[in-house]
Amino acid sequence: MRLFLQKLKRRHCDGPGGISALLPIAIPMIVSSVFDTLMTFIDRLFMAHVGKEHIAACMSGGITSWLCLTLFAGLIGYSSTLVAHHYGAKRYEECPKVVFQGIILAFVSYPLALAASYFAAMSFEWAGHDPIQIELERRYFWYMAFGGILALLRSAFAAFFAGIGKTKVIMRANAAAVVVNIIANYVLIFGKFGFPALGIDGAAIGTLLSSACMTGIIGASFWRHARQKPFRTKRFARLDPYNLKALLRFGAPNGLENLLGMASFVAINSAMHSYGADAAAAITIVFSWDLVMFFPLIGLQVGVSTLVGQNLGAGDIPAAERSAYSGFKLTFWYSALGVFFFCAFPHLLVGVFTPDIPGVDYQAARDLAIPMLRIASLYLMFDGVMLIASGALRGAGDTLAVMLITVNLHWISAALALAGAYYFNWPPTTAWIALVISFMLGSIVLCIRFKQGKWKQIRMLEPAA
Image 1 (cartoon, rainbow, N blue to C red):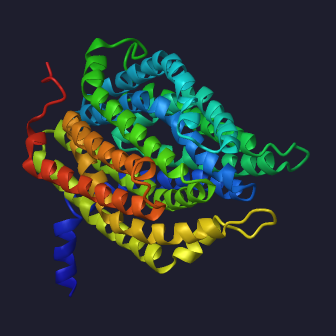
Image 2 (image 1 turned 90 degrees about the vertical axis):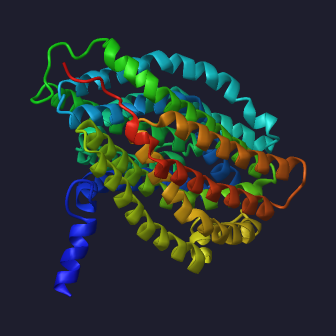
Image 3 (image 1 turned 45 degrees about the horizontal axis):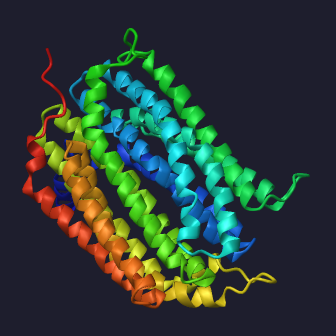
């Protein structure tokens, strides 16, 4: 038995690209993603005690504001892959230069994101939402839109630590942000310790305070590391055409994919919200629990992307491929756990967001959310596989193919949701089943692209002089 376990360990864990190499990078990012999920979860949990229109507005206002930022955040965030390639190639002095190009792009793109926000704020009326919900959505939306510069700068700073594999820095910053978020939201939403009860405005302010905390911690850590060996270099804080060109070339498809993918998600969310407050609350509950499973997988995806990038930067293609398969193995185990909880305890999970409070009747929302949560369990494993495959492809620089595949699949899903809600008049559960099936197809297509192996021929860095 001992020999069998040692053989199993050598096969799956040890060596370049094995699970043992992936976990030190992925675990802090998974924990960071859990903290991100917890902040979103707490926001919606507190809002559930205010009203079902509030919990729905918190989600729709938040994702619509992120829609205006996601193109630029995806472009800037791709700095992590470029950093990973430089780090794997032992070009350590280039790593801070890449990050500073991201900082430049953050300040350039912020006014453009605000301009886009003016038009995005009108989408709530176009979607036919309830007038009460529209007012709440707009208030939350504008707080998030003006605070968007924090998210853009954080994407640049965090890219440095994700790229070099020191993800514990990001984890610690997220932990501090969670503490700030919980305290600030509790005080400002419900009016504690002498503060007025601000409701959804308090939720937005608390979220921005936590975002500022996280950005400040990661930014300070970056400036400290950038002035130390082996990363220290003269005048890294300047425009660098070589790294900026590479970032725009490989990061632009990533940012465009984020934008179009998020736009499709906003369309899906708006279509589901058009069924009324009960359906809006139900889909918010389902997506909230879906994010509990989804965000840790994002951390694993970042780990895979980083390890693939570092190995390719070092010229070790077999280790890069093995890194992806290590990610697939881990995601299978994690997703199986989610399937079990979604199928076995849906009443308990839905009950967390549907408290028995005077003046708010959640029964219809519960009746919708419980079967929808069980249906969602069907695509959890497919979702994990899709994230790992896309992370490996992005780490190799195959961002254009990933963009084309995912954007097409996302908009097929959005078209189903919109047609079901506004044309075919499907009930919410039928529309949700159609969406789940379309989500499952995405992982199959991305796995085929990964198995083709075209990503192995991509070269992100020019040969060293």
